[in-house]
Length: 385
Ligand code: KIV
Ligand code: ZN
Image (cartoon, rainbow, N blue to C red; front, side):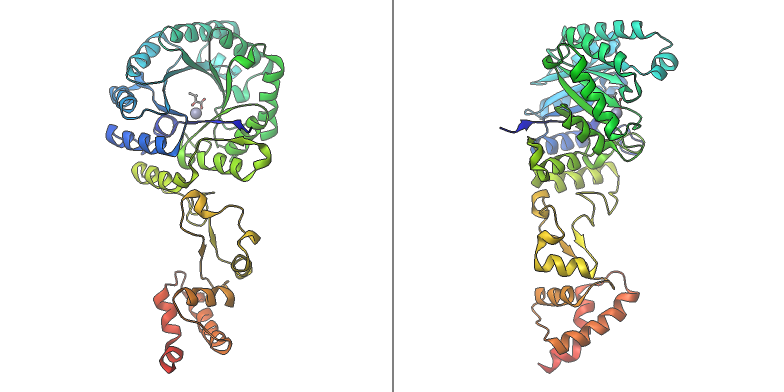
C-alpha cells in the first residue's frame, strides 16, 4: 500500500499574514470550507494571540469545519498557548503548533539566549501545550540554517516531551533540495524516538526552491507537507499545495499519496486568488492561465495528434474542462484547422492555405485572436458554399 502524506494547509495563517491578503472571518470560513472539500488533513486557522480577529476566526472555523484537524499557532510562550487552546475549544480535533527559533542567528539575535536555554523553553512549551490538547506540533524555526547536530537534540527533546508532529521549517528559503533532504535524513538517522512523531516540511520560496525542498524532505521520510494554495505566503511565499499534490500524482513511482481531491484544485485556487486579491502569474505551475495552454505550432501539432506528446497531466484532473490551444503567429495549420472544426467549419487544403496566410498577417499584429476574427477570414469561402 502507498504511504500516506498529510497535507497541512497554512493559507489562513502563513498566507493570510501577507500584506493585502487579510480576510474577514466570513471569508476565512469560506476558504476553510473549500479546503475541507479539497481534502486537506490539517488547516492552520490562525495565530489566536496575535489579534482578537484571529482569535475569533479560529473559533468560527473550528465550528464550521469538521473533517480536518484545526491547528492554531503560538510562540513558546504560556499565554499564547492558553489563548490558542481557548480558541480551539470547538474543534473536533484541535492541534497546538508551538515552537521557537533554533538557528544560531535566531538564538543569538532574536532571543539573546543560549542553545541549552532554547531546548529548555522548547520542552516547557510542548509540555504546557499537552495540558490542553493531545496533538501538539513543534516548529523548530529556521531549522534550514540550523546546525544538524543541535537540531537533532531539539527534535529528540520535544518528541520525548510529547510532540506528535515536528516541523522542520526552511524559514528563510535558503536550503538547496539536496541539503534539505539530507537534513531530514540526518534526523531520521540520529534522533532516537523519531518514529513516535510525524516529521513535517515547511519551506519558503525565497530562491524558488520551496516545492523542490518539500519533495526532497518527503523522499527522505517527512510525511507532512506544510503549504498554501497558489504558494502564497511571507515574502516569495510558501510551498504551493497544488504543486506537491500533482508531483505525487504524476510520479507514481514514489508510491506516496494524499487525500486531496485534485479536481477541486482550480476552484480552490481561484477562490483564494479572488478573496485575497492575489493574481496568479499566468505561467504558475498547475493553476496559471497558461499551465495547460499550447501556443507554438510544433507543440499544437503534437498535442492534436496525441496529448501525451506534450502533456504530463490531464487538465481534467485539476478541475479544468480541457487544455487550450492558443492561436498565435507561431501556430501552424493543424491548430487553425482544428479551431475551425470546433466552430463547425471544415477547411479543405486550398482553402486552409489561403485562410492560414490571412491568419498569419492578423496574428502578427493581434495578440488575442477571437473566434469572430477567424470567421471574418473565411468570408469568401463560406459565402461561396
Ligand atoms: O516559516 C516558519 O518558520 C513558520 C513557523 C512559524 C512555522 O512559519
Ligand atoms: Zn512559514
